[in-house]
Image (cartoon, rainbow, N blue to C red; front, side, top):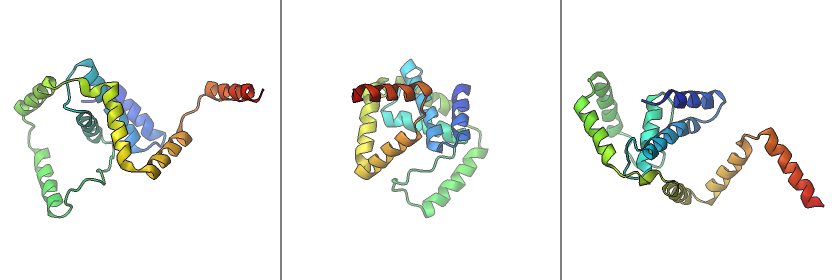
Amino acid sequence: MPEQETLDAAQRDLAEGKSPSTAAGEFVKQEIDHVREGKHGVKNTKQAIAIGLSEARRAGVKIPDNPNTKAKRGKRAKTTKRASAKRKSAKKSATRARAAKKALKRMPKRAATKKALSRQAKSTARKRGAAARSASAKKAARTRARTKSSRTSGTKRAKRSRR
């Protein structure tokens, strides 16, 4: 169950008109924090991200599926819809949930370190290509929240460099 703080932050992001993936980032951040606190571990950084995205989907954030996955869309998609409808009506197994939690607790915590997250981000960015990385950086610069103090400090630096 996500913390109320995380739910509020995600709602705020969506209300500000930010993308669903930004709102989902709040859940991923919470999951990384849980691993760092020692609440449970993860096999690797991707698992922590996957758990966070799963939490976001359960909380109602409309995150699209990964377009790069090679899942077959035809027959398999229909069967999973039927299976998920059946699953929703069935009571969740407490034994299975307990076993999953116990397995996560045994996992290492090193996947949530700054170094591991950096390595994951770099490897993912490398797969995207130069144009996509450039577009992402430009968008980040455009949509960056600017504070009053950061605007004034920039002008002071500019004045100093002109002298």
